[in-house]
Amino acid sequence: MDFSSQIVRKCASNIPPSSTNYNNYKLTCRKFAPLYFRPTDSEEIINNIHYLKLKTSCRHDNVNTLLLKQIKFVISLPVSIAVNKSMETGVFPSKRLKK
Image 1: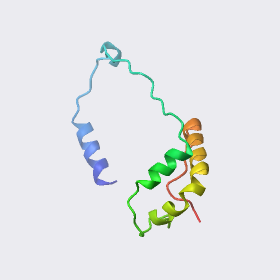
Image 2: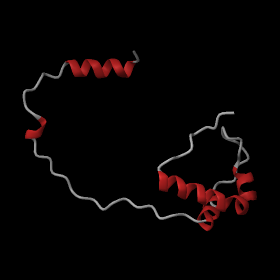
Image 3: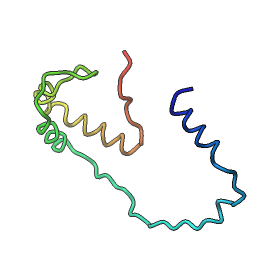
């Protein structure tokens, strides 16, 4: 058991039991407008890549911003399609692809 779990269990054991039903509490909630993301396009992808800081160091994906800036016109359409499809379906790529 990790340290956080121990703290949670200890705190929970100090909370006295209650006979009050949660339905007795009136919760007021403001209504919010639905969240909407407009679809992206290749121009937006190009602009976002343009404003990345120029670095030659790589992350876990072995891609640096210098390379992205050099190929931004080639990758902008496929990236915009992938982003839009992810937003539409709710399916997102994992952080790291397995080799």
